[in-house]
Amino acid sequence: MRFKGGAMNREENHSRREENSEDVLEESVPPIQEEDTEEEEAEGLYEHFRVTADPGQTPLRLDKFLVDRLSGTARNRIQNAAKAGNILVNGIGEKSNYKVKPGDVVTLVLPHPPQHVDLAPENIPLDIVYEDEALLVVNKAPGMVVHPGFGNFTGTLVNALMYHLEGEKPFLVHRIDKDTSGLLLVAKTEEAQTFLAKQFFEHSIERRYRALVWGNFEEEEGTVTGNIGRSVQDRKVMAVFPEGDKGKHAVTHYKVVERFGYVSLVECVLETGRTHQIRCHMRYIRHPLFNDATYGGNRILKGTTFTKYRQFVENCFDLLPRQALHAATLGFVHPLSRKQVHFESDMPSDMAAVLEKWRVYSHSREYEESGEPLTPKEMREREKLMNLKK
Image (cartoon, rainbow, N blue to C red):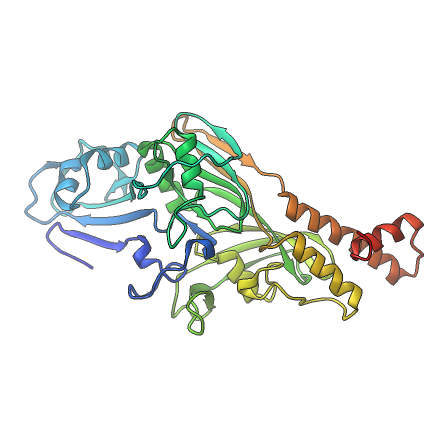
């Protein structure tokens, strides 16, 4: 929607109502349930505005100019955005006291305020990696919904954070889905949220994921580029539109970390942040995430037809009853020190156990193919691995 004469142009408004299909689709389409969304970055958590001053604009403070044009936006939110460097005038960062002139083009990123006033704090254990007066970094366990909604109003990360913060509201700057484990950044103040939101918007946040996927790769690393949008056949899942006629631009970089023959451990770096991006892109290149029911990874896609092998894979599925995806690395510029900080999360126990099983299996398979006999200890490990002995 575009207005002239100093009115607002929300050409890059990233609110959830416009991000329904992995991030984008008709407003009439119901959003994907939170427990099904994977990687929304700050999608749905901030808005990007563009405002052009009309030719008759008299000199006016930048914060007052924006308050007049952004209906319902408090002046202190705009001032926080200016302090964080989130307001540009003609492409240059300006403070609140800048005097707007005719023809000035003002762009800004504003995070949404918390939307959980009626939620109750809940005493749920949290693995807090780091905390100070501005933010905290949480190592989220798999199975926990980040934000309440669509039938999940209790037991969420936000409920747990409200208890930890003694009733104060946390400020989310990004999300990971229910069944993805790993590092999540949460602001404790609106000022910190505003500063961090810009980094997510500009994709300057350092985040690396580890994923166990089906199949072996010919190459050591690669890049997947393809628009992601809601599937035409099934509106609950995402699909890649390589021609770019639907969905939103998405880029995933991957590198092979470890090979097990029938499955591979890869590291993924997101250049964009679309819902289900890693899961959708990996399926697109025929490497679905291991045990990802939504994208077809919860069945045997590679390997032999032997019963023992099927038992082995099913045992791995039981150990890891979710998609094998972990947010392992998080790096960003701290809102107070303005210095780069870096955090890492060890592989969660369920993924670690399955990876170890695949290592042993892959090792024993290499011995079989080479014709070398297994030692008695290796035989015992193999029998346990194949689920023949408990």
